Image (cartoon, rainbow, N blue to C red):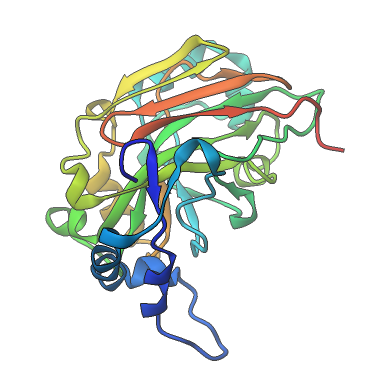
Length: 278
């Protein structure tokens, strides 16, 4: 990305190693990001430029091994859920307390889309909610990582939308329909972003501000989340961690337009399809 232009550096993918079956269970581009970036720098001077407005943005990570989610990770959201019966139902009626009591959960990879797609809502008789979150992408294999080393395992960051169907079923089940995991607009590499602990974020629906907060208010901050997750399972290059959503979670309906922004990453507008999925 260069302002409102995109440099076509597709040929940088030629540095990726070839594999035979069984294929690796991680994202090859992220695992080889250092080599890809070096090749990008070689290609940039003569790369063709196209207008950002002329392209459709797909997910910046094509093949994450898993999408890890952090529940109830802003205290204000915990407080809000105590007052909202729909949010309480969305966690099975269990009292909302502390992330350490709940652990983490996974979304299906098939839910993943970029912000150039449309969100296709399911179950018209259910409440479908938006949740804006800082998303981080793991850059190298992480197992039992210490907090002080955690940031060195991050390849980059993006904006995440953790779309949710409210109801009594298991949380991972209700959060995994197609298009319910949005990642965009692009990947900002860790060296470009710096400290992820003081980023403002917001989301509006049809230009009505719903969510506005800052990552300094995370209960488990980014290093703690990596330490916590990697103590339970190995994180691989390309794995995505959605860090949790702040207060202001609310419903969306067909035809709505969502606007999401996170400081130092960017912003995007995304439509909700005009009709529910069949």
